[in-house]
Image (cartoon, rainbow, N blue to C red; front, side, top):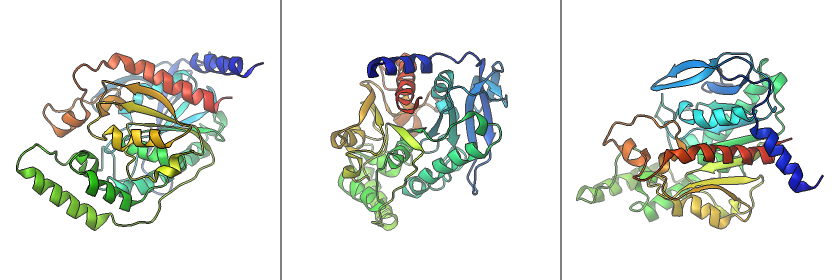
Length: 343
């Protein structure tokens, strides 16, 4: 069988719902070594029912018995302050193709705990991804239905930073400092998160000065940060923070690396982050390039942000963006993982 036909058949099989699957299972595992909980979406023979989590109601089969699906795991690394539920549409699309999906809760940078976002969290996240894989392998419900020699990783925003680490990139807190010193005015939200924004008034100079003072005090460490897990065989980074990576380390990633670009992203301005990676990377694949999307396009369903809040400004959809395209983006992400993880 020629290679093109082989890939076509794999994709057709991956994107067709497995015969034994009736619903999308949902359960929570305890993290290892003091990690937070791991939310798991998975193929099941049980029917879906309405399940409410926070402001969201989803059709899921709570704590139902898993079935094998295609035997592959994808780990999703959430963004700063994120929850599993804002990735549930992507998770359901992956499950419909047979994947099991795990979302570890990243310590100090999740919707329950905002205490240590940024570089302090970025050091921990790749290890938490690896331990989430370990946890699925140790669980008696999932170990019989998963083969963990080929695992996918998807991450958005701060999770995109995790994704680049899992693909073989290396970064340092000092490079984060250097980026903010050089580009605080143009990429302010990348440096301070959701604390405040520049408004074009007399306070901007004070905001920049305070931000840079804190950043210089906390993030001068030049030690390279890296992580390797041979089980991870395909990675996608969506609207990522990337300016603190050594771009040479992402020129030839150790695994297939896909990119999801939102051109109207004002939280992680593309030219400093994902476009810099794309320019450096000889083998990266653009999975989706959304000309009218903002940073929050990675969130589906989108949380009900308070109108006028910083979260609404930075994560809300720009005028003219059609969320109807996101189903196709999720299918492209699923196809990428099917091509690189199956059989």
